[in-house]
Length: 392
Image (tube, rainbow, N blue to C red):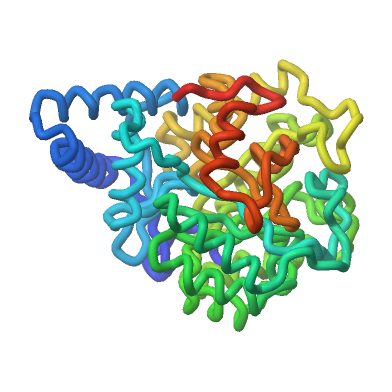
């Protein structure tokens, strides 16, 4: 399998002049959405300017350097619905409401990380949900669907189904995607376990947009060691191939540990992601939670500087135009604070407990038994326990 976004591949990386044209269309679309709410062309333009300033502050750049083109839509971030689409418009309208103090009072979540199972075939060194992993399921099929129905009432336009390993609950996963696709872009968070060609097609037909597949090292032996399974690397490689052939967007996500973060390792990883044809690469810093709780695993300042340099280079340097789009939440957090804790996202674990994010545990309520909006408001008040909560 080639790693390039070639003319025969289901995805195309769009950069340069074509990306600028798409950006112009996107900005015009955003302006008309702003005008619809502002009812005044001057205020609409000012709101759009404020949004651009906010985006640059959070992400470190304003111009969108490249897009992934797929099935008539363009994607520039894993957590943002593809443009043009109703979901993208709804996402953007939520951002415009934020700029104006959210007069509706409703939650303005961009995405939800929703764990649908406690089961997993791996015993990963960094597992954030280690305390919940086991053979017993705590939520029935009806509970899972009830939570989704509650989430739909918030106007959510993007959802990430995780676990455990969500493919160990494939029947429920398919039903959830089939329902969620009506109003949301649906993503899967997976180790690649069980993601065969047939399963990939089944997920695609159900309505899956993309899969974020965990790959923690470019070297197969090192990844398998970290995941404590001799076949884990091959699962990832095959899952990427199967998703691409089924028409599912692919993110490769890695846990940035102190042992891994060197320039050589990060660049080797990006080369492999490019070779395999991933659309996105996501850098997730190791956190002292789950199996890493109490361990001295935080990155050194020099390593954070290295990741920041690679991230910004990948966004701004034309030499990276054929590489996957890099996302680095740690950079965003250092710019403005945590965007979780009910601000732009939150985490629902496999027991239905609601937390700030997968790495910041502390339940404020249960998604099955408690009013969802009340729990989100509690999260907003409590904030993130690791990083100050963003007011953006």
